[in-house]
Length: 379
Image 1 (cartoon, rainbow, N blue to C red):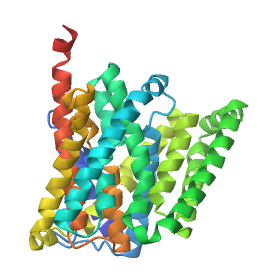
Image 2 (image 1 turned 30 degrees about the vertical axis):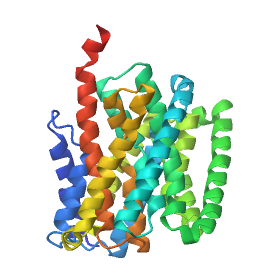
Image 3 (image 1 turned 45 degrees about the horizontal axis):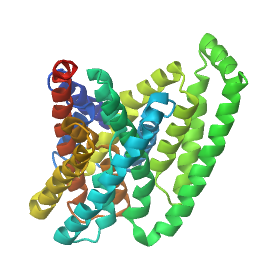
Image 4 (image 1 turned 30 degrees about the horizontal axis):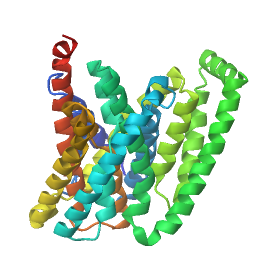
């Protein structure tokens, strides 16, 4: 990795905000970043080498931070969402049952023995995508609360289950490693809650803000990277370490100043770098060489939408069912782990990303339609 290459990566990452700039398109920034990575990586001009150790390590840092931010987006402290957990859990069970049937069917059609992976992907949701859409469009009401609870639970359970189903041969070892990471995160949560309850954290925050120490950010990075190191040592993806610690911070209450600092670090540099690395790692020519992978990606995307729309029989509005099918973190994590550990067939990582893009496009349209129909619902 050289400074000219790093500058090229930063320039390419600007494609994300440029595509997201027109408000009427509502294109997530990560889509442009993935496209930029594809353009300068293996599928395009070959200007960057995704296997270069420094590039890979920086991408891993970005991955850990992205999953941490995703965890902080789960509204653990929201009392209204807690009240909606019952209906959300019921809908999630219905979605999981439908996902099991569709996932087994897709595995039988396309082969590969990845039925558990497909089931997790089909049943998953993305809190990092759905919650910002809900906030930006100011969607509200009991159906939205129930859908939010469903998305939060689906996202959490899918991220915990993904390392176990991606490589069933090492599921036992992965389970032990996951328990170690989650136990360590639980201990850190208790420590943070105690520091918050006795006022220690507020005093540290005040001194840090007055003296410009950025202590909260330094502390969170120490814990995050230590948990990531534990995950790597115990043969678990750093995805779980980042997400679990994000949940812990969300449960205690993330300081607004820390949120701004993390936003600058993650969204300004390491996050875009990770998505560029992922795009550069994908070889879309393998999709052309293996046409069934294109069909698999489309089947996963439309299958996830169909599976989540089953909740309409439980009274959920159709647009909210489509919105709950939005996926990003879990397919990206599956593709990343699959590339790093060589667990997926040629073209399969790109197929997973293709399926996620289908759900994102559908969720964007559905959220806008639900917002446009709000006056009619009020009448």
